[in-house]
Image (cartoon, rainbow over all chains, first blue to last red; front, side):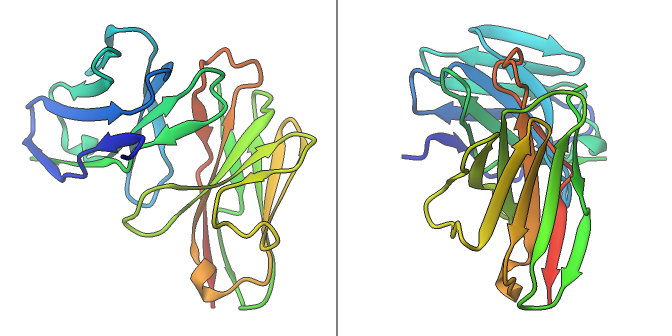
Length: 111
Length: 118
């Protein structure tokens, strides 16, 4: 079982819609959760961090964490073509010295 | 804040030569830096964890004698690809953690170095 699992996609949504990206993790002691965005040919960029159960909103992005279900998600409201990228879910164990990345979900936002 | 730079951004070298890539944290101290490799349309692959003042920890299958890592200061780690071959052509990306861990473990990535070995 992979430590951090994501659907590889591609996930295709029309412009203006809500894109929902999901991630599950296997280590119950995981403490910190992150979403990165990676454009083709570029390095990953941190867009959201979440540490406690519930929702965390930042602009058009909302991260949701459910530790009991070992599930973290990212919602992108009012999706734009510029949101088209690969989104990486990442999980750190206590101490945070190692972060495990998922393989990423490719998102396409159609104009 | 939390800016990480890499140099060079791209490099072309001949087979058999060595290439050094620098990774710097510009506005914070990083006791730990990470080196990743990414082939086209594939996932990030962690190569090694670089710790300031000590030997790097390599992931399984990564040749430590081929990929030399030096983390001489809290703001600089270097990766040297020795005796490079065409199969080493890839996108090499470093990342760094904030020294005090205030961030909760976020890694901040450099812009990457695209290596082409001819």
